[in-house]
Length: 459
Image 1 (cartoon, one colour):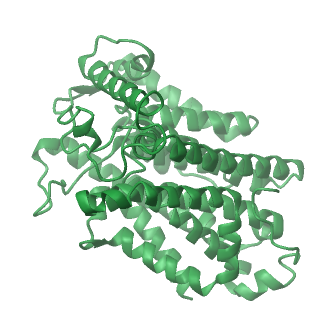
Image 2 (cartoon, rainbow, N blue to C red):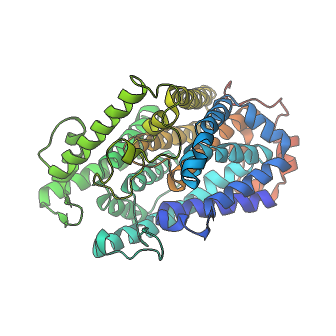
Image 3 (tube, rainbow, N blue to C red):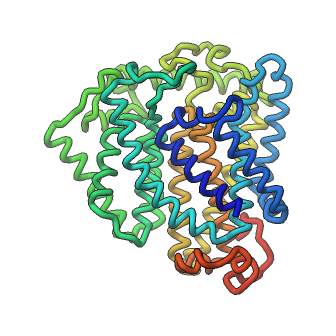
């Protein structure tokens, strides 16, 4: 039962990260915060289920992940004596990948956990997030970011919202609704619209939402719910344009309005004349260019600058718009800057093999006409796209609030692809069958065919 308690704990922790951001991450006793406690607990459980853990480690994306972890150690150990705990914190950008192996192992040990996570826990997350995150965001808007009190002894606000992650989770919720068979009340549709209205002022988050939404449209074009939700969103944007309704966010230098909505997209490719948007784009592009120059074309080609050094200070961008910034607002380039071409190459292999596994699983499920499996893999792919896009514009993967979320989704997808091969009937089971069955039934009886365990990439 301990693994079920752990998965419940993990679900609550992910909800806390999504709603309260850095405030929730500070729960614990330094240096063991809630994320590190969950990591140690999960690692201990993996030791108790050696066979699923060995299968998880042998999974191709995880093999590349372990390779990146070892290379990260090579790029971290020489700097421990200089930067101390900062080196370890920076290295957790990769270290949080252990959550992928943990969730994979526990789901293979108990295939019915797939149903609990996908059909029970995530719908609970949706309701709690739509209400909780909206209240937190409204609190920040009413007080103004500069007036929100800090957690004693830190520079972390008690109420804080990362709008990119906010939009990313809204995409996950929208995709889940579009692909689900359940009915959604107008109250929850209204909550979705309200959350979108108070959060779309983030450029990267808006792009993450749109591209994730596009994945669902491309993979499931005949789904009527997709077009209903799209029509609802277009109606809201049109209503804003016709009424001219706007909310001035003076502390951010931006407005919630239809003009701001289109300015976000325009700023991705050209100058908009909006100082705030253009300035943030210019320093990002300048910094990203510098990273490419000193890695791909410079002296840090193979090993990067290592984990521990403050990249903002060393690269000359300290104090640029964001106080306390250590890494560029692009997780992929952070890996390149800190671990060089070797680390970045492994990162590309990790993501490309995972994407290959999910795509093959989607195609095989579609070929076999397993509609619920098709919907699951579509949802995972859309969520992953949103996370990858948001990570390209924000410090998302570097902290537990985004890093743990990313790697849990990563491991969930790989576990689902393996369960689909070994035990596809689990998705067709009723809730009562799942609730009343034992783990032994699912792994050793008629629910599963007893085929040899697949590694998850070849499906």
